[in-house]
Length: 364
Image 1 (cartoon, rainbow, N blue to C red):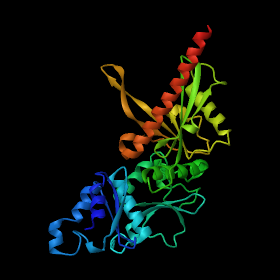
Image 2 (image 1 turned 30 degrees about the vertical axis):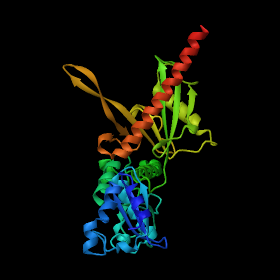
Image 3 (image 1 turned 45 degrees about the horizontal axis):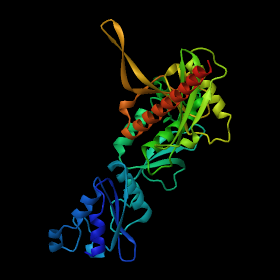
Image 4 (image 1 turned 90 degrees about the vertical axis):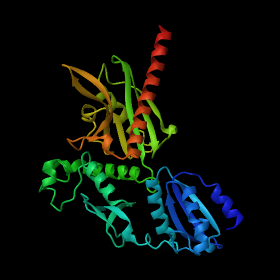
């Protein structure tokens, strides 16, 4: 092994990621992934293995062909797996035999109809559909879609809009009768969650979260915080002073600030709107063209004849379904983003309200 290559391997991080072996011409000949980059790459080059064969352990790669390597760190082993498959498909390395075929990649397909149907497919050539993916774990993506259906009731049937299917009656399909009016928002919402699920492969969605703060209905203010994917984008943070609503009325206050926000066409529109609240806050927002969800952060539990407030991770609600989704059920990376953006909107609203109160006190 060349000295330069050995030094590179010794400097590899012990974090999840993808490694790319290159030959002397700089061509990528093998791509692998691991939860520990340094440990995995070192295992390829075990001295005892060199004495027995010219091939790397666990592969059909001749180690003498490897002249250099590159690596890409990821946030988790799951992300590394997705990235590995994406890069193999892109570069078609000589020694990645198993992952080259399209059938190793799973996609969520949205049929090109006025009311799209969802399905899972392997092959993407000549498919007349909008696709999200790839997703490497069949069981995991099936379970995730099943959970999403609780708040975004999507269509899988071939029934006409005027002929409700069984899933419609169960509350899991909004592609029939009057519910078709909000079906475009359902599809948009699903795509946002799939892209959050599939980062860093998918485009990062634009999320906006809104909250209000007041003191017994006085000095009511609102906040808007923006995330691009998993990261705050403070350039697009905004503060609002409530003008039309009097007294304690959080749903109406949220409606006011979101309506005022959407009039600013010079601000990039979000892919998803999140509000801090539950069903009552959503009731006034069901006709938005942008998908909206509510995150309720508290649960009520009856104990010894009285109600006791117990903190929970929260529940997701949407205006498109009578069901709710427990945050504990969804993947950690998505749950983390939703909790962070909710807490940031809450912090931003409170800080603005305190500023208004301080100013009022000083003016007295």
